[in-house]
Image (cartoon, rainbow over all chains, first blue to last red; front, side):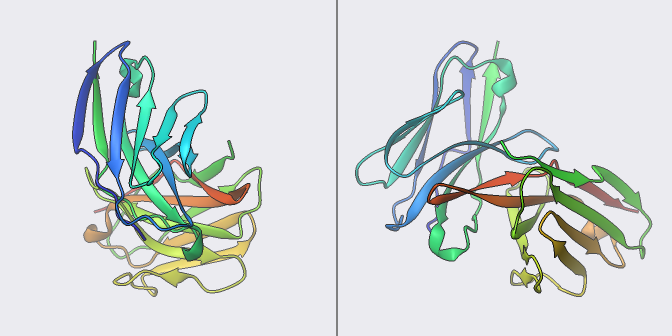
Length: 111
Length: 117
């Protein structure tokens, strides 16, 4: 499975838009990208998933360029409650959808 | 989204005892469930893949006789930590997959914090 690289930590302020970029240089043709959010002592929560171009849902947007070697999670107008660890994962449909978890990005939102 | 219920959320036990953790998919059937463990400030580490009606597939380095997995139905998988020791203390998380078009989405339980004294 393709490995992912993302910043270890990021800071931002309430009301700002936050973009977290993840690189996945060796992504394969059938792989797709998924982002999860995890709060301390809780299981990860699905945020968004995409294969290419742009995907938007009620909580976030996911931007994937044509070469798919990176992806950017965009959180609009963050609040203090968005402080969490965000994981970028590449999922291979050819390997029983196993996920290899990277280090994640610890996002801290300040007032 | 789909709901995965994990129980108990926290357990404290004495060294040498066994602990069972349950993972249930509440509103969907899950032929495959995954079990992870997570140490403080670290990522999730896949322990095993649980398939309904068959033996679990364990990741390298995970003792199958230590971590017993049973997936007897499409909505329930259990992880039993046998003869637990302090080094088994960790946060255990289960997940279940659900088809979403051509892709699969994973939904996670709330986790179980195991503390072995």
